[in-house]
Structures are given as structure tokens and as C-alpha cells.
Amino acid sequence: MPRSVNSVAKRARRKKVLKQAKGYFGRRKNVWTVAKNAVDKAMQYSYRDRRVKKRTFRALWITRINAGAREHGLSYSQFMGKLKANDIELNRKVLADLAMNNPQAFKAVIEKIK
Image (cartoon, rainbow, N blue to C red; front, side):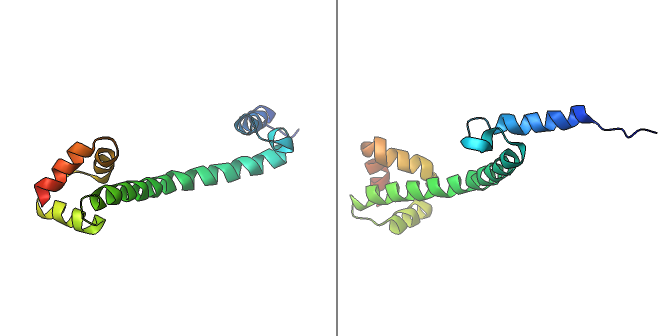
């Protein structure tokens, strides 16, 4: 009995990977073995960096809140401690946006907790 090979599925899998490698430089975009490794590595980076992005933004928000709080004589930790003590539930993203784009509202929050 002759050997059965599913070449249609194999070709589809390879086309899918080569389509994902579109835009890569050199042989990474059109040679199957190189493109497969490049796409696998890119997927690992994208998975990891979706989590790293959350950490990076949190650090940015904390830096902005700290800068805004220090203009009014408070450190970041003092500011956040007083927010919690006064039951003001604004998250860091909103506080950072206020500190950057709406200093009057941020000043009102600080006056509320002092």
C-alpha cells in the first residue's frame, strides 16, 4: 500500500509561518527553517512583553505621581498612604493622568488628604 502524506496541511502550516515572518530581514522571511525559528522566538518575546508592558506602565505612573506629589511637599509613599487612610480609591493610572494633564485636579486631591 502506498504511503499517504498530507502535503496540503503541511504546505498550509508552512504558509502560515511564512506569512507571520513577512517583513523580516534576509532569509528570515522566506526560508522555512530560518523563518520558523524567527517566528517562534518572536512569539516568545511577544508573550513575555505583554506582561512586561504592564510593569513598565506601572513604573511610569508611579514616577509621574511622585513628581506631582513632590511639587506639593509629599513623597510618593506618603501620598499613597494618605490616600488609603482617607478611603480615596483612585488607581495609579488615573492619578498619573491627573498629575500630568490636570494639575488643578491633582492639587485638589492633595488638599483633600492633607
